[in-house]
Length: 506
Image 1 (cartoon, rainbow, N blue to C red):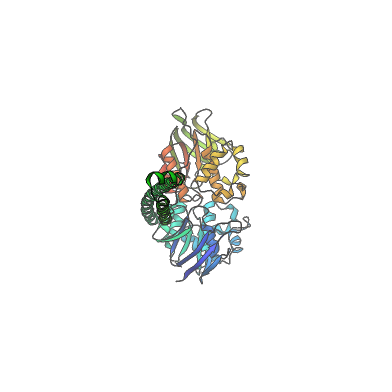
Image 2: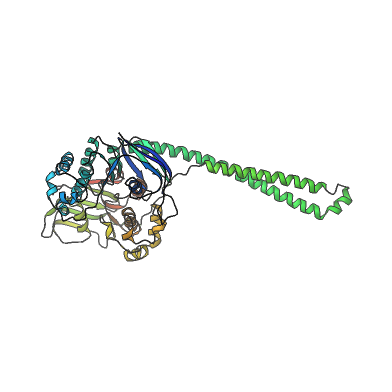
């Protein structure tokens, strides 16, 4: 058993004036199966790179561990998989096969060119590579992207069965619940360590946030009352100042009429003025003290979408549809489906079952051979969120114009999703994957649409953004066909589930 000791670590990027981490101190046990969570852009991948010694801050990281990293980038994808991996890490064939067997993957795939592997197979092979060296401590960054539910369960079981610890970054709640026993959460520029899985972390965080919200509300009330008192004293000061001024101007008349001491009014005014000013200063100190006691709670603002419900009750009606790629394999058999003008349909099934191809068929992208009956409302406005969102490029203003969406609506939803203002002038192709995904999503939300086709919206989104989407979809109930492998997300928003089997049966 080893530890990772972090002492007073501070780090910021050269082009930024804000610290990602400040005076961070942690003591992590290498036997823990640790989930690293937090909003996109708050430092999760940066934290892993600091451990890997690829970035350097002030302070120190003490450990005798050697780290492995997932996913490594294969440079020559046309190379045989085993040889391509051996160019990255010194790995013996038998060790790689051992890990693939544990993952219930045919080990002979290592003799195929890496480019011929499916997305799920590539993920599993690279994850297996991370565990081939039993003396290394795996750092695993987003292992579930583009994996179907069955593949995610295989990876879950693989990690559950490993005795060795690791740090895993993921935004899939169900996956984290099955694969972690500690959570390291980046919240408002601070890191908090929790014992338990993600569900236990969320429960603890919710209770803490509720307590802090009640405390903040009480403090705001007290600050309001103090501010009112300060205002009263200020008004009193102004009245006293006015009386003093009047007294000075009419002093001769008052003395002639009442024979009062000439200095009496001035003296009393000065005394009351000092009292009022001291009271104001005391209230200012009390307000500052109570403001310092307030806890910064990360708010999650509500998103908006430009959904326009069509007056037709049924937007698409499909009866006994057989669908095949032109001069290619059949992808759907005897599909029956009705899409109403409101309500969310989730298409489920393993990778390769034809879900994305069905979207392209509805969008009239590509060539297909069909048999059966399909009726679709004319001039239907469809907003499409593609799985391959890296097709987008250019500056945001030009992108909005090209996609014919309101630029202000695009920026507004990006701000609400925690997109950094400093990246507004960055070209989309130069953004991080999480930023690119939020641009694609903000574009779809800003488009006026009667129907949404969303392909894996939860990929690359943190749980905060996912919660924003879940709340929005529950409230709006747009007409939508959804492809998503995140079980929690689907269970929260889907009104109907259609399962597509790879065997072409429904």
